[in-house]
Length: 51
Image 1 (tube, helix red, strand yellow):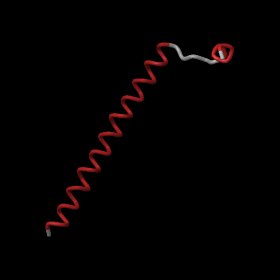
Image 2: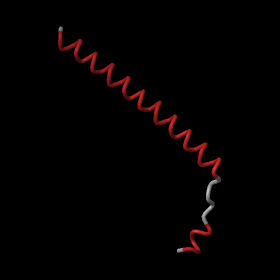
Image 3: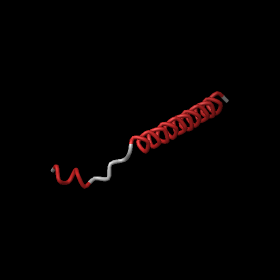
Image 4: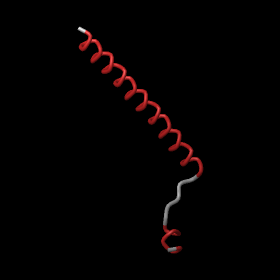
């Protein structure tokens, strides 16, 4: 197992931080997008039901 772990191309600290920031930004954007769709669809359904 140790021999296999030595073959792994480990990312540098800078690469890890950059990729973590990218993932965090993507996560926030997707959460906002899904929340926006949820809010919009719920308003649309309530508008249709109330008529």
